[in-house]
Image 1 (cartoon, rainbow, N blue to C red):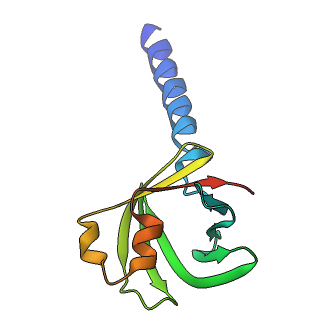
Image 2 (cartoon, rainbow, N blue to C red; image 1 turned 180 degrees about the vertical axis):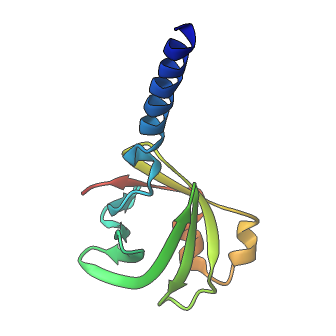
Amino acid sequence: MKSKFFLAGLLLLSIILAACGSSDSSRFPTGKFVKSGSGNYGLIFNEDGTFSVFSGGMTLLNGTYSVDGDIFTEESNTGGCVSPMKFKYTFDETNLTFNYIGNPEDDNACDGRKADFNNQTYTLTQ
């Protein structure tokens, strides 16, 4: 009898842990993000793995991305930067921060990407 209660308790615990592990907060966030201190400059991430960089109402470039855990990979871009390029990201439900994996100096040929992803934080606006 005790073993049945023990097994039922383990089953319940595993269901609770599985539900906690599949929280939406573990997914890469999509939407419009404005760069901290920039006014109306930022990034839009779409659920289909595409992104764009905007300034005001103008799109500056487009690209594609993939995510594996807390690693964001820029797969392609229309800005002429060499891809793929990997970044570690954190998201606290409001702020999205990127940091290079490896040496940011290795991406000096791409000033725009370096300015946008080298320890930069964006705020979710919509």
